[in-house]
Length: 477
Image (cartoon, rainbow, N blue to C red; front, side, top):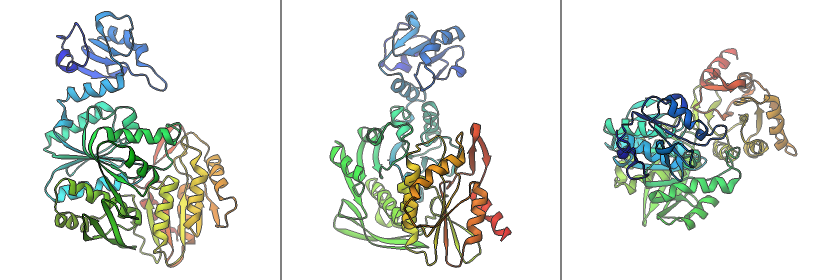
């Protein structure tokens, strides 16, 4: 592709006829004819390697300041943003050929996007999905390392979706993806805000910074669908300038749920909008999932789908792996696996499960290493609100000492009377939970969800699937 075509008048250069063989922001991927984009990261600044990349064979470099490289440098205001536009152009703007639907927030993104995709696919609309657990092109499942893929990878994925005949793409839009301009020149028909609670404060300096990152999505969408039950959602609803619709499970809104009934086998509620009500029956339990479903239904209605088609699809939806997932035991107690790894998420899942727990609610949880330490005691406080017994253990310790992480967690249990056990090894902790479980008890394994690994010191990933661990533990009883 010619450099002038790739730039699309977004920058000025005297070497516009130069043929570009590839684009990258990774020094390891530069080859003869590459366009290298200088991006400043946390530990490395691409500008420092610009001259070396030209010596390596790069045709030109894109930078934010004059590097003294003459006609081989293209100076722009923001290289991260510009790289997104370059990647969009390199793949022929796949984002313009897809109907894009985005969901952002701390909790609920995975379930909401999964439900939307299921409804669209069930009603005959081939759909791609970009998410935390995996990426999907129709029924094809692809591995993912990030909730929002890196810029080039994201556009490459959208290009595959276009070539596979997808009409829609539904994606979880992370704060990282927004701040780091990973989504290129994407524009969303509809964007959903689920909620905002403490998370990622190891990256964002405070909750206001985190909120402003999420808010960026609503500058690049036609319509916003916002949860006004959430304090930040209520604030966002008053601040966005695009077309907006509210949703709620607690109050009147443009779309709201009423007459909610929660059971261990699922839920039912009346979806209300425009003076009309429709009965929704679902196999996925939990009050928080009623909120997720309400948002998903609202999105699909905005896309012109009929209530009959939407409700029929929801009745046949079995839920998301690792999201309030019941692990079969064949015993007289229940084991639930959930990804809850923030104070709000753990409180939501336990509050919901507590409603249909006939015996004791036992919660096993830990906190990740090298992540926001301030939320550790808050996780404990949230768990203590609803659990009858706690088992504090390890999650993904990474390069931190698991014992010190647990010490931080236990601060949150000071002054509470909830009995707890500390079992640092997560496998042994699960075995312990199974041993102490009695008839009608429910064990909630919080934090890992869909993950089938643990991250230990030195970023070592070991295989660890809680479904397998539960099966192993049951054999030991």
